[in-house]
Image (cartoon, rainbow, N blue to C red; front, side, top):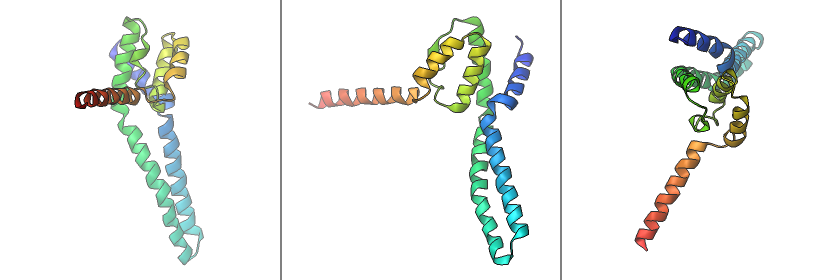
Length: 155
């Protein structure tokens, strides 16, 4: 599969599948703007100041929307690299274990596993890794081992 076709497929899937959480935050932005406009137009003067309260969810949703949008380049690289791996090498769940706890990445991993015929492997990975940060757990274990070594040297 050439890069242009892979990129086209990624863009289509990104808009309709992978950017789901971005669309939800955009909906939150739209609702808060609409509510603010309605409050400004419909209420009398002292109550018009309550439209400022609509800025709180607006900025929260805008912050998360920008965060999700800024990860697009990383998601494209992830999609490109792991598509190549799934085509050329046998499936290994260690490739995806570090990313399974992130909902956005889980959508991409699920789509790729289903696309390349690893539906059952995805289900077992989901059960194992989706509810814990595997990368964080590994770092905790390394830190515990370092502390044990230090305590052994001190005693």
